[in-house]
Image (cartoon, rainbow, N blue to C red):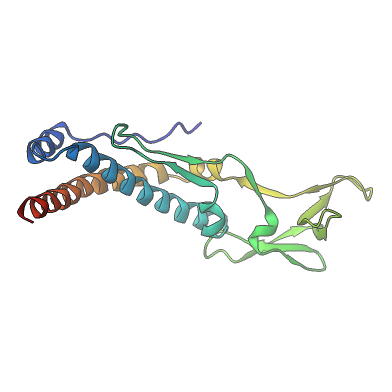
Length: 191
C-alpha cells in the first residue's frame, strides 16, 4: 500500500539559507513553508494529471478528491492526501447504447463499452450507471471506478516521477523564496 512520498532538503542548502537570512526575523520559516507549499501544489497537479490520463476522469473531479495539508512557519511538512473513495462511472461521460453503456477510457484510448449496463435516475434524484446482479430485475448495483489512490499506486513509475520533479522544484523554490524575502527585507530597511 502506498504510504507517501518524502522529500528531504539538502543540509548544505539549509545552512546557506540560514546564513543568508540571519538578519531577517523568521525568514527561515517563511522560506521553508512557502517553498514546501509551492512544491506540494506542483506535486498535486502532476498527480492529478497522471491519474486523469490513466482513468479517463476529468481533472476537476480528481482535484476535488486530492487535498493538501500545508506547511506552516513552524511545521515544515506538507501532506498530499488522495481520498481512497471510488468515483461513479457516470462521471466518465456515460452514454446509453442498445448493448450497454459507453464511457471514456484512458487518454487516447477512445470509449469503451460496459455490456448490459444502463443509466437510471433513482428516486433520490441521483443518476448513475447500474447493472443487474443476476437475471432478476432487482437487485441492481451502481458501477464505480477504481479508487484514485489505487490508480495512483498502480501507475508504473508515477511516484518516482513526482518525487524526482518535486526534489528539483523544492530546491528551485528555496532559492527563489530566499531571494524574494531578502529583497523585501532590504527594501523595508532602505525605505
